[in-house]
Amino acid sequence: MTENKKVRVRYAPSPTGPLHMGGVRTALYNYLFARKHGGDFVLRIEDTDQGRFVPGAEKYIIESLKWCGICPGEGIGFGEGPYAPYRQSERKPFYRQYADQLVRSGHAYYAFDTPEELEAMRKRMEAAKVTAPAYNAVTREHMKNALTLSEDEINRRISGGEHYVIRIKIPRNEEIRLHDIIRGWVVVHSSSLDDKVLFKSDGMPTYHLANVVDDYLMKISHVIRGEEWLPSAPLHVLLYRYLGWEDVMPQFAHLPLVLRPDGNGKLSKRDGDRLGFPVFPLEWQDPFTKEVSSGYRERGYIPEGFMNMLALLGWHPSGNNEIFSMDELVREFSLDRVSKAGAKFDPEKAKWFNQQYLRMKSDEELASVFVRELEKQSVSHGFALPGSDYIQRVCGLIKEKAAFIGEFWNLGSYFFMPPAAYDEEVIKKRWTPAARAFFSLLRDNYASAMEFTAPVAENIFKSSAGQAGINPGQVMQLFRVIISGIVGGPALFDTAELLGKEAVVTRIEAALQKFT
RNA sequence: GGCCCGUUCGUCUAGGGGUUAGGACAUCAGGUUUUCAUCCUGGAAACAGGGGUUCGAUUCCCCUACGGGCUACCA
Image (cartoon, rainbow, N blue to C red):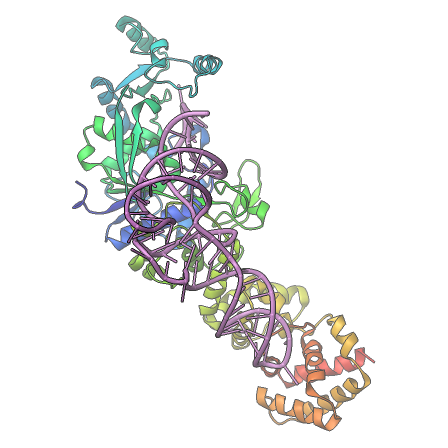
């Protein structure tokens, strides 16, 4: 039935806040699937709940997708398209007729119960030890709805302006089967479903109705969404059936959830900063509480690496390779290699992916980012910003040691200014009169060197050690600390070469002055 | 509680009736880098339990346990 249909998928978040990693992954899988099959990827905003509107959330979603490189070809923020509008609040006029159609065909009915009455009903059910209090085939007989009220009464209430909702009338005894691409056949009995509200008293549809109507109207071929929607999928199947659209119903694929790294449970907004990693792609400030949540972008994650990591969280390629560009992911992706079980997010692996991607960046690219940090540091520390060639060479040396570009400054500040402090342990242990004599000699030999490349610096270092009658190994580490202040670093003589003869000599001299 | 989904190393996972159960992250050990990181080599590390079916089950079926999701006029 859907085999020959053009692939059209959608990502349909509600703008109730920033989308988190799980949502990004859902969007990613939709995007990969669409591109893989030469189909369309649509962004639709599901803002049917006016009470939960969060200013800025929609813009955040769009910006996030852009940063991630997941660009819908159609939808809000991405040039709209032939099925506009793509914001459900703007599609309000579409929905009513379908709700009416369901009422006319006897698959839905008006209900007038107030929130208080519904609450009372649930209380009663609980008191009667009913396992699952619900508005269903049994309880609807005792509520105020079009099934229990007389026609006159119904008309009186409606014309009197009374609030009402439209509920689906779930059949009493029916087996609902639905095929899920990831999970196979799922069978649910109608008795476990309730008469969900389809149309709210504020005139807006609920997610269930809007989602089905829009997917139909927008000719969506595959619904790829999180597993949290699986329980309501049978309801959606019923809706397609009752609306007469079952033959063009999209295929379903319910994705496993992204779980928290510690303990258990679905990854949620609060987890990230509590556990020390972001859950959001971009930094987000809650417009009401002003609370700030960190983002992957601000933490220095490379979007391609972030996507690569996310793609592998719940999906596995056919081979052993783990590094994939977006194009390669498109080529490799398939829904039948998506796993069924939820996946715990591992921040360590995310870091590893970033490190891999950091290394793939050219020195030039890295320098263009690092220079912004350098500009700030040059102001606060009062050093002159070196030329871009120098910055690029620094990046080339320190990128092997870093997982994030944010670490560059701490790793390589000595390339831009003399060390402000020296590793005390090394000084204490290694700075001996013999060492002092050696460095005094080294300073003179370096100062009179004709050229100062890494091999030359190394040769002079070794011959000076020979002259001083000292083993190079005893002063090597000391030399690093003298020129950089710290213990670790890139290849020592490459570091010296880049620093240049003047700086190296000056720093040895400074050490000679400082330590006696 | 009810309904639904799930369960292979600590984590992400491959595999699938007969395999030394493979890879990656993390971890440990050795090597290279006269340091750190990288890199290389190696190690430790898993089929939740019980019943079937079968000559043979980690793989298929059932039950149990455990985990997760859902259970709103939220999405």
